[in-house]
Image (cartoon, rainbow, N blue to C red; front, side, top):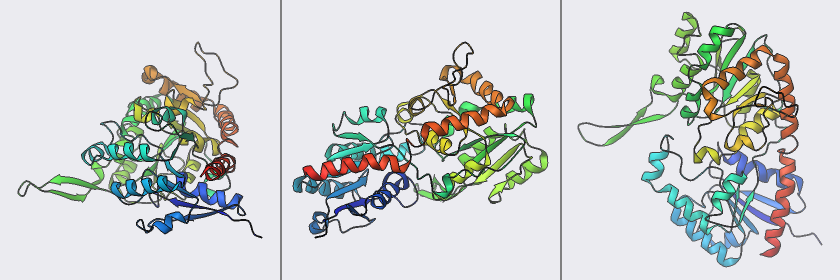
Length: 411
């Protein structure tokens, strides 16, 4: 007689963003590793009012909320608790970003932070990314477990295939909410350009001019949306940082950049700066192949303190040297290769910058790697050895499956 499979329903929160790491990939891999034991359905829009649908599953996994609105999410969570069906809420970012975050006003205006807090209290179990965030969530729900972001090391975008260059290339890959983090680097690349011109290249990955801006109509008093103009984009501000307000590029290239015509990559191997345009979530990490040193400045506040260490993991899988803020998620796996007083730590896998030394150490550490290409390779290999196999999807799935077995057994 064939053994009954455990049925797992996964409800992703989106199709192109965080759900890849927190919902879709982990559960597809779960079914791949344990096909005789688990059956996974990934469903975006189930019949939320159909009780028999929910009762057909042994476990429900969702990101932040169940369904299209908060009231629906509360209703379903309470029913699942009543029926004894394990339901896991996953959350990877704090429910309330700081006032500098572009989504802050929208979140406060719509009470989204309060809704997420209520969802956390109603969840049977919660999963998140770091111990720091666990400690925050436990104030609302004691049933919290860590399942870090993990990567399928065989997925093409995470298999290193670096482009070659005689220059040391310093790059950043991220999204549109990091202006206050990147402002930490103001003036750094201009200073480096004065000292090491021609020996390094800056690379900005993820460049994206899509989006809208909300304006108030003066005549009607109503809000209206319009497409954002290139010079209004946060990516334009990012680029000013990476080019020292375009002073590190020549006149012709500056003109090309300010034409804002989309192509896969602006600039070439000999340029002082390259702009790498945005890619879909399924290929975005391939942009790590354009640079040698990954940088991760981070402003100190609660939202950043509880973030995940995904940038460390991605850089490690690509064997990149890494310079990070000595704060929050980057203190989990990173070990500074340079000790106080100038000593070398042979166990170090990256370079770390204390916030009180932002004004000098970002410059010093980047300069140090520009001058020591062999150190770039050494740190990249050590970071890889740190994150693999620890954050391989196979490793994390092996711990997740034990958790799921236990929850289902108790239900």
